[in-house]
Length: 355
Image 1 (cartoon, rainbow, N blue to C red):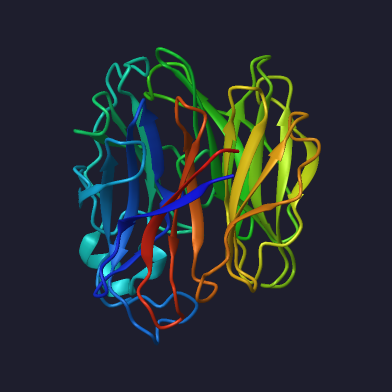
Image 2: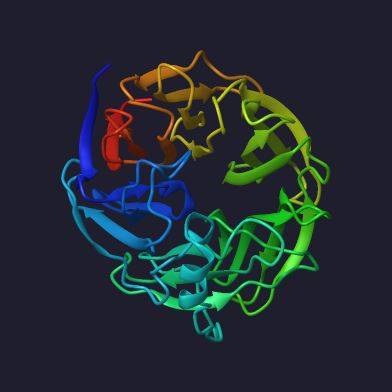
């Protein structure tokens, strides 16, 4: 099967990363992707980024199904530092502060050009989160609108929205654990266009170390499936678990372990429902050979195929964080950050393939 790789954004003087923190959406052959651009620093640690300079949220758009891209700074308030506070020095974060939140008065989620995305200030106790919406395919964004704390010490939201109706949506979010460390996943819902939210349920209230960064789909029968990034007692002990809710996110059952080992530090997955009813899960592997992989399920997430390697030419572990959309022709477009060598720039790439 043909697998094609394309460059979304690459600059030897920039560090580009983490599409999974934001979002990716498709309308026919028009695709929009958000990611972060900062500056490189070989001494930056696990991520070779410069912590002394703020990172900026960028927006990429393709009009040909993911083959060519134009990139600008994301046209939303609070784009500087959005979702990257843990990658910046405290004095940088203090200079950015919090955005000015707006009131989500009468938001609707049924526009043909609708998308929603989330921002946050960190990962642990004290973290606050918010969201934006667009009705015109990300040409303009409304917000930021603050998310409640749900009685938790911190809410570290990445974008995982299921649209249920004109003003109804289910969000899968990550909260801190009772000790203030990251993290555990829960479901929440709004029925009034984001003016208020109801806590629904924990997916796993007591994970081994953490469960974070859910990626969710709703099946035709209403079942919700979510893939969660998991870490055990050690930094090298990482995997992806899949959970199922058959009662509209009021309770959850562990369904399967889709990926046994995502490498040192772990990596989140993207999860998509294909037209033929299969589930597609894409993830980055931070163990040699450093890879972007895909696996499919033909039984609603209970079992998964042998992983298909989309590419295995990464220079080191600093890769992954995919987002994926499915085109009208059935091909998947997955975007992620990547590097060709350990001392090379981190850039945004896209791979187009038939699942």
